[in-house]
Image (cartoon, rainbow, N blue to C red; front, side, top):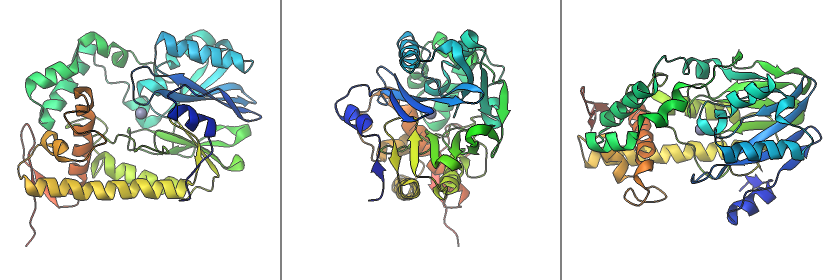
Length: 353
Ligand SMILES: [Zn+2]
């Protein structure tokens, strides 16, 4: 095994279910864990970079009081402050990474930078009730019972954050240099989200990987029927596998992820993740073969998860069904299966004469 954990204090804290400490990783670089109560991910790792253009933070944490306190305390602990933040780089617009960007900008005047494809997803023009309805309809399209979909969508108020996400000041593309003195460049890695991006510092041999490559878990690659931005050929899983191939050859020593702990061995970890999905595609094809006409929701119940479907908690069901759907879409793109028209979509093996 050539994947080695370098964040030893982080892994020790993970095993003991504690929040890891703030750590200085380079003379100009710190990691600040920001807690995510009641999430199995436990915390997001925010990075603080001392640059020629001022203090830059990379990812931010959930928009909650406990996360805000951890972030402000963490910055104070390294002799900085929210008011001193000059820029906010964001790997993707999920709430654990993007949630506090607006509040930091309001208190500091910092710019927010996000990939073009991720920014495009923010300007949907929908209010909280419409976003909720779209989510519920997507669940029904994957095969959730309407009453279950209604319950899982929760109250409309819970979607207010999704309707009110701040728009970035800077929109970047693959390869753009975002911090010149550190030669920090964007690497567009769609899959987990349409505009997910990693940031590489070739001179420092570092990759800040967000959720794209994590040391222990495989990030959720979800497709929802009709979801905006997931319309690339082969769907988000095809994009994710291409994005893994794109980072595997980067010449870096250490990977600084958005969760869990730092590690080395990017090429091997990327290969592990590609292999994970190859096996998963086989498992999904077998599930369709054994139960022709299954929905993604039904396929998900036949797959192996870290906890079985009925023990994982129903809030995890949409993630599991979305993950099953992304594999079904890629199998369909490869001509192995086909989905019916209509709602919900049902899947059958394709036999080629
Ligand atoms: Zn994410």
